[in-house]
Length: 147
Image (cartoon, rainbow, N blue to C red; front, top):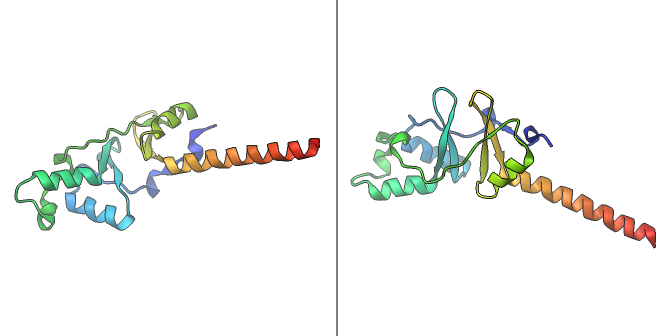
């Protein structure tokens, strides 16, 4: 199966740039209720994933930093702990699923390493659930027909 079927395109993805401020990221993540978002540089390349934990640790470990002055901290100054690996758009399901086991989303890049969107783990699980349910349903129907 082509992984493009699962793609949420960049235009529909909430992301920030490394030059965005900590405050911008906090407000955007709160607005959309996300715990992690991709970071995309000014050339359109995926550079990493920013999590709520990254923001919290920065706040905790930076003397004199509070919510009011988070607009002075650029995201590129915040160490990130998650290293979400990306897949190429022509990757297969095996590659995608192996990454989705440990990532809430899998960034997708094109042949020029440009970020084109994400694939959410929940979309993969929902697809697998439907396939499993359909298969079981078909098996139940076949068993009943044999009787």
